[in-house]
Length: 452
Image: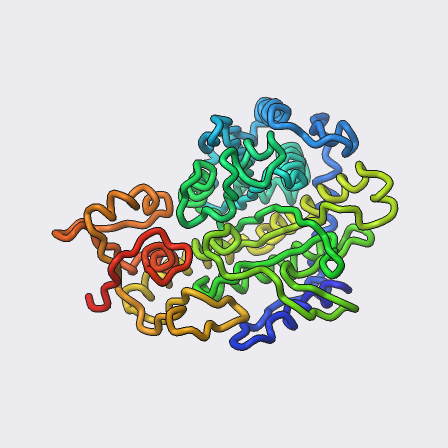
């Protein structure tokens, strides 16, 4: 089965110096793929009459912003499981739609304390397939009477965030200002990036799937490309859980569609063998890595925008339906992982935060300003083998970064010099990447304190 091939590709892509071991139970061997196919069938066979505008056009037309608002209002009105909220407003003032699906919309805040599965629905405005998949999956979860789905929702809230309505409306990658929101997860300068960070901070998801699309190439043309967080500061257990979501859940779900294939994002393949890694780096400013640094099991899903077959070349609607189906299948893989490993996911998110706090207090480990999970940095300025115990901010610096620190969930204590940010807190992996001059995308040149 191809899930073995993708695990092999992932391992081969990790042969650089310092590579971490790719761990996968290989879903085909334990029946996980078969259970996943049953789950998708149960969701897709629901009895709801509500369909998306995209479905109504049979894939000919993508759903518009206004149509999505009407769809979600109707979904909220017809299902007691659904709540439509606003996570903020875009640069042009459009609502950032936040759709939650749980056992009962009256107590979703309580169920969120148990388990939260989050889906980021097309951070890039010109990548519509993820949005369509989110609308379909939220609808299917809302109306399904399948016992397994009802059990899932009894302990888990599914959260769907639509973070870029301005790019959606304009069919552009960036927001209204032309900013790529997926490069704003450290500085949080955009209202859309702020909404994503605030949702992660407040809803505390255990698992997150970030849905994208990509332009295929000669050696880069699978139906789906998937990847886990690669920043070296991500907790080892969260990193491994994220790999397992990619290899054991999302990939089998995608490949259960007849003829669909999946590959590792950033890895070029020829004749079944990887020969070059071109992307998938360590940057904490992109959501895939930020998710892991926030102790959330996470992944990236990309589907090819171009035609992959002669049939798709002659029928754009067929191509569009495939794009949405790939994203939907990957998202169902996320649901399946929560169904099968809910307690482990929640426990490890909590444990990772505790480990980070303890590591910051004891000044253990190494702080990495470069490299990634399969590449050890070789330049001195990219590593700190003797971690600081905190950072000192002047009063002016605190004034500049106070709001950003709060959005990340980082705390500080005022003192005579301004404010002290201790590394002994759950956000320990992010703090140096924000406040140290050695960080490529940091927002402040604060003073590291080596002795507490």
